[in-house]
Structures are given as C-alpha cells and as structure tokens.
Length: 297
Image (cartoon, rainbow, N blue to C red):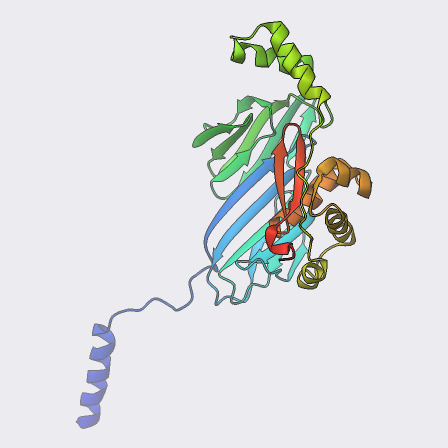
C-alpha cells in the first residue's frame, strides 16, 4: 500500500508541477537585422547582425548572392569567428558569442539595362536599403515601411520578401565637379548674383584642400600585434597612413597601393569595421584617419 501511495503521489506531482520550457530555444537566433548598401558600380555591401543564444555551438546563415568578397565575421567584441561557406550557406562557429556581425560584398544583387539599374533580393526579415549617393529611384515593387534622405542619399526600409528597386545612378565613379552642380547651387543662394556664385566656386576650386598637420604618431607595433588577421594590402595601407602621421586622402592611398577604386573602398570599409580607421567626407574627397586608440600616447 505504501508503494502504491508513493506512485500516486509522484504522478500527482507530475500533473500539478509547472511546465518549464526547454533550456535551449528552438533556434540559436534571437533577433537579427539586415542592411544592404548599394554602390555605383553595382556592388552591394551586406551587413547582417544577429543576437544569439550563446549555448548553441554554431549558427547557419544563408548569404545573399552567389559570389561573396571580403567576408568579415566578428562577435560582439569585434573578434573574428571561424566559419565555412558551402553553396551559399555560411556555418559560423559561435559558441559563447551573444552577437555576430557578418559583412560581405556581392555583385549578384544588381543588374543593369541601359542606364537603369535594378536591385533585386529575397529577404526573410525587414531590410534597410541604402541607395547610392544622388541615385534617382524609378520604381519599387512594394511600398517601403520607411523612407529617409540625408546628404543626397536615400535609405528605405523594405518588408520581408522580394525587394525590387529600379534606379538611375546620376554620377559615375570618377565624374569631377561640373557646371551642373553650380546650377543646382544657384537657387539656394538667391541673394548672390550668378557671377558671384561662379567666382566663389572658382576660388574654391583653385584652393586645394589641405589636411591639418598633426604631430601624432601611429603605434605600429601595438596595432599590428593586436590585429593579426590583416591582409598584406591592409598592412601596406596602415604603413602609408603611419608615414602621413595617421591621416591621408583616399586618393593618396589609391595612388600608393595601385588598387582598383572599388577594391580600395572595400579595403577601407573593412578597416573601418575593424575600428582601425575613420572615413570622413570632405567636399568630394574622403579623408582616412587612424583612430586615436591606435596612436602613441
């Protein structure tokens, strides 16, 4: 009788005990964000950030496009994570990581017919799309959830599903300042005569942009010791910036390294993501600066 009572007591306890969910979630991904930055040459920079259940040893991510360049995968501390890519799917070994950031370039999300470009992608979450500077959007397949504009650059938040955006890139990669830009500027400063505007523009063009001289010195030994995953061309760029006391124009780096402009830009964006350099726009040139934490104190 005592044994039967114990069994009934145990069954009663199971029936009345609160039901706990499993310790592990059904998926390692808690939340995620996706952003696509479109460039004038048709390349798209994909930035995918995920909040994770850190008890999972790995997470599988489907990459957009077929060709992927300059893949960078880091955890919440900016430390590189091991990964492998097979048939467009990345397996990231993320045990103990609470967040991962994966970025890469792909040329496969855009197509061009005449002067018209089309961005096309299938996404599983709401996605931010940053259009090229001065691009004109011709058509959208869906109404955006949000539209913003800053410094001649439009960004849209598109719902999950198929994204199709057709646009015209107004300026080529190497187009210099033109009279068209002057005509755009004239209505803004209506109090000036056209002659005055032209004179101001001429003076601005004649006076070259100068970098502020700095006595700062890059701590190369410390920087290169800490960043052991740098590529040879990235090390070369850092050495050149060190020779320039930590600051140089992007055009100077382009001339020094002899790389294609799109390759140079991807290299600098990678260094920026690794928090080694800052990229600052000044007129129509970019100024590249080594971050203060990499300078000698």
